[in-house]
Every structure is written in structure tokens, then in C-alpha cells.
Image (cartoon, rainbow, N blue to C red):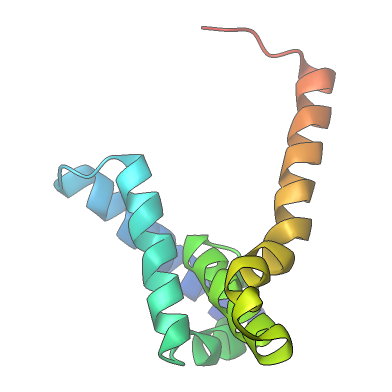
Length: 118
């Protein structure tokens, strides 16, 4: 039960920070997206994001900083296996399944619900 609470609190805090940034700064949603992914990548490179994922699970791995973490983790793992080529391939390999799922499920929802342009 505590795992669910921690996931909710950490994930909610990340989302609340994003909302505060959009409401009280001139940052657009695209800027906040870039800030969060970059922050997740930096924290992951410094070894600080994995403990947060260990604490909060999906509450830390699903939001945007988790994507940055996954990119960096993939690059580090692939560099250890393949050398310098891993710099180019690691992030793509690590995130390919998630990106593919988002595209496929988005397409399926578009077919089911028939979106209309505004």
C-alpha cells in the first residue's frame, strides 16, 4: 500500500511543479517538457534519479523526467556493451518500445473516436 502512496505523491508532485511552472512563469508546455526531460537526464547521469524510481516506482518513471532517465540509462548501458556507438543507439533502443506503444495506441484511439479538427 505504501508503494501506491509514494507513487501518487511523487508523480503528483512532479505534475504540480510542471503546472506551477506553466502558470507562474512565461514557460510554455513545450518548454516545461524539455526542462523535465533534461532534468531527468541530468539527475540520471549524476546517479540521483534511480533512487527516486526505487522509492516511487511508476510515480517517478512514468512522468517526463523518467523519459530522460530512460534515455541516459540506455546510453550508459549501450556504451558499456558496444563502446562509442552506444552513444547513438542506446537511447533509441531503451525508449523504442514506449514510443512505439504511444504511437500505436494513439492511432487506435484516433480510429475509434474519430477526432475532428478544431
